[in-house]
Amino acid sequence: MQIVNLLGDTIAPLLAADTTYLANATAMKVSLITAPFSQGIGNLIGDLTLDSSAPLAAIAAVAGAQQTGKDPITGKWKITIKPPSGGFRWNTGVSFAAPVTVYGFALTNGGITTLLGTETLATPVPLNADNQELVAPELSFPIDTNKIF
Amino acid sequence: MMQIARQLVEQLAALMVADPAHLGDSTTDFIQLRPIGADFTPRPDLIAADLDLAVDGLVAGSESMFPNGIFANTRPGDQDTWDFWSITASSTYNFRPDGSVLPLLIYGLAFCGNSGSDLWTVQKFESIVTFLNDSDILLINQLMFTMPISVFSNN
Image 1 (tube, rainbow over the protein chains, first blue to last red):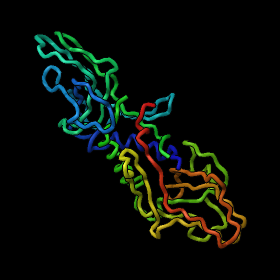
Image 2 (image 1 turned 30 degrees about the vertical axis):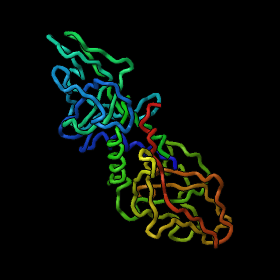
Image 3 (image 1 turned 45 degrees about the vertical axis):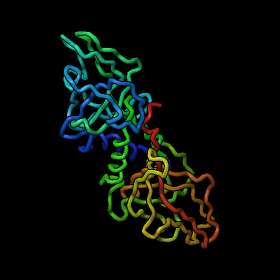
Image 4 (image 1 turned 60 degrees about the vertical axis):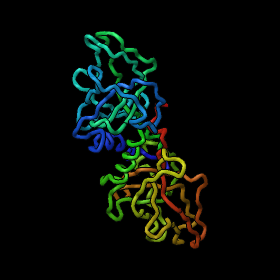
């Protein structure tokens, strides 16, 4: 069956406002992934190496319903994770003594116990000196309802 | 764009079938499967008014049939494809002519909400179903639409 917009348009807002995960009262967190990983739907939190120590610790998103909208060109829905004031931005600061290479970003629940999504970096980024900065790209999930049939 | 994790897709399937404004509405005749009595082209922007959903010449009770709840399940060996399905309380959707309009042509099926006012999904038959006798019957084992994992893909 071909899904039509009246039903298809409910899907992204439903997930974005779901208080179990994306709209939980405890803000989700974005962590740096600091070991190579193979991205897939089956990724679990335990499959990933996440940096948890300052200054590269996880950054909280904004709690509550996330943003939804349609791409005006493709017509696809997307759910965009609300970044905090200042963005998902990591800075090694001064006296940085724990060099890492960042391979991507992990979106998790607030307790960093459930993986919700991953974003890869096309080129891994080494952080190995003071005052180096890494800013995550827009973190969003595509939802192409035209593929529901 | 991010890769969604399976946990979130599972949650979405559960949310969809429980949504009280749509698939999760438990009012008896809120959700309906209706035959379509005129030719149409399936496309995302179709609405109920675009289709002939009030087909004359069908036995009373088979102009629209009501699912017995909507369910979402994965397939054996494919935990990333979700089938949304339902049968009727009497097991099978069956559409029959009353003999007043023959031949009677059926072009497809519409899955509707709001007692037939809201169109949710459509299926166009590969071949038009033609009722020639009042003993004819069109049996549909189940209503189903599928959410493959490619819904969440960038491609």
